[in-house]
Structure formats: structure tokens, C-alpha cells
Image 1 (cartoon, rainbow, N blue to C red):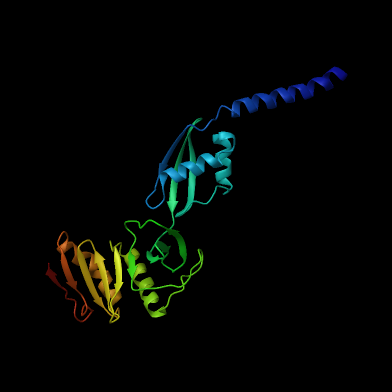
Image 2: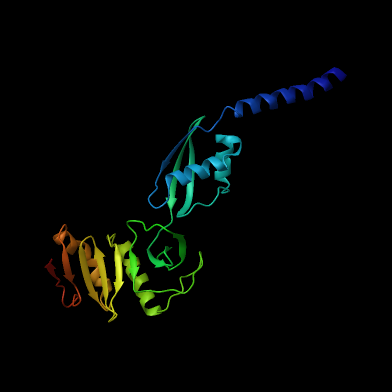
Length: 235
């Protein structure tokens, strides 16, 4: 009877050792990354490797499921799935960036509600650049404090409409008289004081298709439900 009692811990130890040796063969060697636009694949790869406890794919997978991975700029979350014992696939889901402003040689990126997401020395393509708006301070995770609330509310309205209608707008500029100019490639779009933004933005996509590839000014100041006309002056 005593021999059986002594054998049981040995069997358990052998099983645990065999399990550990098996798990230890799951070494992380290959990382496939998908979904990066603003974020850096190299930075994500570095973070993944740094978070991979004992360089083990199983432990990394479990850590990701528990939401314990290190935060990465512009990334809302990452999903990790196995490809094989030594390989994983990483799907990157980025934060929804609505626009950016320049601040002390850096760019502050914010979402459609005006919440500051990130700051970077780099200005990224595909994010509208806002001119004519100034801030004195800011903090990540809080609403961007601006000098002119009316302007900022208009920017948020524009960026929400850009997202709603899937428009490609690279810039938003406030002129000295308070009127707004949007930029699409080599086209300046004059939309006036913003009083007809909803109808203007709803139809802007189709109008831009007609002048795609050209350079000039698209006049939409008077565009409204009662006057659905726009004119284009080529440069």
C-alpha cells in the first residue's frame, strides 16, 4: 500500500513534466500581421514578442484572451489566433480617427467625438488635417479643449458626415471670415459657413466623381435643398 502512495506523486510529476515539455515546443517564430494603417507593423511585432511569456504561443494566446497585452498607439485591440505551434496571425483593429491638428511640432489625433486618441510626430495620410483651430493644452482620453467651440462643433459635424458618407477628405480649413474649405486631392471645396453641411456632404461624393483627377475649386457655398447646384473652376 505504501508503494502505491509513493508511486502516485511520481506519476503526477511525470505527467506534469511531459505536459511542460510539450507546451515548451510552442515557440513563437512567425507573426503574420493584418489591418495596419496608422499603426506600425514593426511596433506591433515588437510588442507581441515582448508580451510573449517564455516566447510561448499558448501563453501569448491566453494573455491576449484576458486582455493583458501592452497598449499600442492607434490600436483599439488585437486578436491573436494560432496558425501552427510556432506561428500566429494577428488581426489589428485600429481606433477610429476623425482628424488631427498640429501642436508644437506634433500632431494630435482625435475621434469623431473630439476625444484625443494619440499624439505623433508623423502626419498620416487618410486623416483630415485641420487648419485654423488652436489649443493651449490637451490630454489623451479627454475632449480636445479648443479656443473656439463653434468651430470645433463644426469640425465634429464635418468628420461625422465624412464617416457617414465615406468621403475622402484630407483637410478642413477655416478662413479668416469663418467660412470653411475642405480639401480632396487637388480640389478645394468651398462649403460656406456650414449652415447647409448635411445636404452638401450627402451629395459631395457624387459631385467629386464628376471632377475626379482635376485641379481647381468646387463652389458649394449656395448648395442647399432649394438650390442643389455646384460649380467647378479648373486651375
